[in-house]
Structure formats: C-alpha cells, structure tokens
Length: 355
Image 1: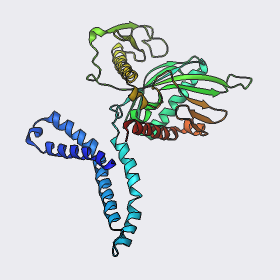
Image 2: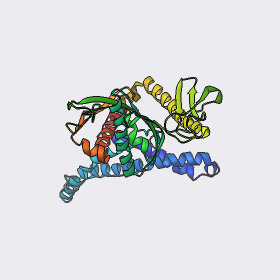
Image 3: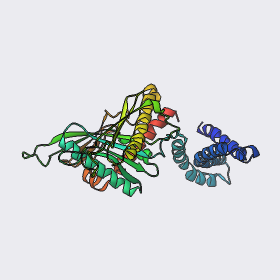
Image 4: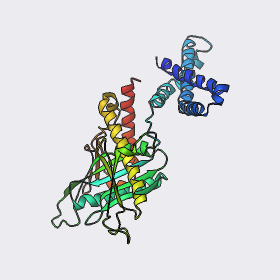
C-alpha cells in the first residue's frame, strides 16, 4: 500500500526534530547543520504525506458510512471531492520521494566546441552561446566567459563559460552532447543546406573537498599567448596548460595577461573536468544510474538537431519535435525543451525506484 511507503519518511522527520532539540546536537555545529539540511529536504515530502494519509483515512471512513441511512448521502458527496485528490497527491509525492542529485544546486562550467563543419560550426557555437545567455538572463543567472578561441570567420572554435545561480546544473545538465545544425551558410551561393555539429559539455563546479588534486599530480606548462589579448601577448609566457597526470586531462587558459590569473582559471577548469571524469566513470559502472539519465550523458551522443529551413528543433532522446526554432534561438525560450526533458527524467526515475 502506498501509505505504508510514506511512514519511514515521517518517522525520520520526527526523529530529526527530536535530535535537533537535544543538548548534545546543540553543541555539535557540524551534526546540527547536517540534520537541519536533511530536515529541510524532507519537509515538503512529509507535509504532502500527512495530507495524503489524512485524505486516505477520510475516504475509508466515508466509504463505511455509505450504507448509513442518515449520513450516506453526505458521505457520497464528500467522497466525490476526496477521491480525485488521492492520485494527484500520489503523483506529487512520488516526485518528492526521488533521490536528489547532489549536483543540482551547483554552478557549472559550460564548454562549447566546434566540431564537423569548420567555420559554420564555429558560428553555431556563438549562436548556441547566445541562446544560453538569453535563458540565463531570464533565470537571473550570472554568466562569465572563462576562455575563448575565436573562429577564423567569426564565432568560436571553443568557448568556456561559468554560469552561477539557483538550480543551474539541475536545469542544464541534460544539455551535454552533440548538437547538430542544418542550415544554408552565408557563404553558400547555391542555396544548399549544410550540416555542422558542435559539442556541449555541462560540468558542475567543485570545491577542494570533492576533488583533491595533489600538487605532484599536476604538470604545468607555460607558453606565449596567441590572438587578441593586449600588449603582453606574444611577449611573455602568460598562457598556462595544466595536465592531470593520473587521468591525462588537460586545461589550458591564455585569456588573461597574468600567468597567475590564467593558472587559477585553468585549475578551476581542470578540477571540474576531473570531477566530470569521475562522474562518468561512476555512471558507466552503474546500470541503474544510467537508466536515470536522459540519454547516456556522453559528449559523443547526438542529442539534438536544429533545422533552420524548417524552423524545427528535434531532441532525439525523447522524440520531441518543436517548430519554434526561431523563438528558442532568438529569445532563449528553452523551457519548451527543458520541461519535457525533466518530465521524462522524473518518469524514468519513478519507474526505476519502483514507486
């Protein structure tokens, strides 16, 4: 019975309340912080669970009164109001019962790289970056370019940006993979549609506790910057390349004039990439976790096609087709995509959890 599944959450919530009022916990700040966070995470679920149990009990009581000569009609009327509430409450509770992704409230590094298609792919990197920037404005997120490598005909061969704000990873985590664009390039004289591709990576930011990289695990190389960047470009070895020796993961930054600033940025990127590597390894080992993803989460997976001549966007993982590409690209109206993706992920998670 669904009601029985709720009792452990209610019992745990009550236990936490008892613990938080004890003198021992009051003097242990770390433990008190952990319990308060757990209590906060359970509060919405427990509130809905109590309403569900109260509603279910009221339904049972009214069913018993249906045969009563005096109260039968009143019971029937109340049942007509109460019974439709139960499945709605159950659906809401199932979502609240799902385990939280520990990275959901993290800021991210967004990495965009031009792939097949040369100049046209670099131009599409700029278009996709503009699309995410407009969505970030609407969400009141802060967006800052960490590193960029300009394309030869405009756009970017590579761009790394930091996005900070509320629920950034939770909303953008399904964006990782290959994004394919089909359109007529400005340089195309015959009007033919070309297909290009870029790679998007969404990496949660991490702190020193989550990824402990020891100094002897890093190889640092310095070199002269290339491209625009001020008077010191090509005159000092300000660019920095860091290599994480155990994994071979590399982060190179040359945007700042200061070697110190480039090193700090490169370290931030390196830690995030090492953390992403650890996450992917964990997913690869766990079949059940893979089922909770929308797609594989791999950078090599083709996830979406943007067809400009047809004003069509297709997300291949959930079979979503929208004829609103201009609105999505120009206005950053990504909720048209994000909401179906998150709904699909929740449905798969509920199935996997057996709720």
